Length: 225
Image 1 (cartoon, one colour):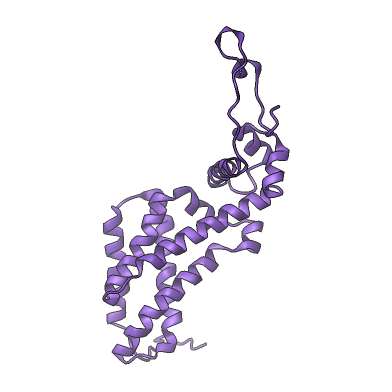
Image 2 (cartoon, rainbow, N blue to C red):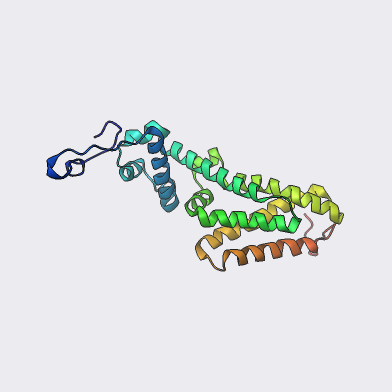
């Protein structure tokens, strides 16, 4: 075993002619990033419960204590992975909401989420899974709530322009973002239609749904509570 915790073999540590080759050691930061990459892939494939510290260490070519040294265990590694993915998605959505017409902003938000799913597929699979750690470190639901807060500002302005009560903007923001997120989960595996077409249909439903909003909607059935 090398001093950095990596596990080697005589065949791999000897160059031709029987000379011992110099092992290239990772820095602490490099090892941490390697473990995060391996953990992300395994958590996406097998989930939190299906992934073990032994498997993470084996794929990294290190001993189990190295994983504990960097993250304190599987829970700590998972928490860092989830936090990174949540910040990545939130940054992409927030960065996409630049100045523009409200419909353009909705398009940008839909594209940002679909872009994240397409580029960070493993990360999205992790975020939408339920796990004991996610419940304490932040969940996909809390992330959706953060994104909805961004959309809420867009809807608030549009509601004022249309004479609707802006206090209802949070409700509609949650509904719209939830719709996009659930569609994203479906598209993650289907990947059809193409991303631009999915975004267009999402915005079509959201925007024209807003066009037809009643200021005081009523239930037409018998149930009132």
